[in-house]
Length: 86
Image (cartoon, rainbow, N blue to C red; front, side, top):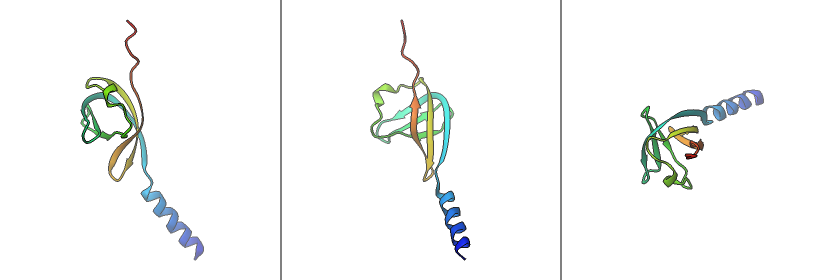
C-alpha cells in the first residue's frame, strides 16, 4: 500500500512540474505593462519584474531559457547580443 501511495504522489509531482525550454529569435514586441515579450514566431514570454526593459528593443536577436508554469512561458534567463564594437 505504501508503494502505491508513493507512486501516486510521485506521479502527481511530475504532472505539476514545470517544463523547461530554450528558444531563440528576434524580438517583435515588448509590452511593458503586461511584462511580456513576443518573438517573431508569435510566441509570448513573461518577463521578470526586475528585467531592465530599456535594454530590450524590437528587432534584437535574443536567446531565452524559460519554464512553462500555469500555461505561461516564464523567462528564467536570457542572452542579449553583444553591443556594437565600432
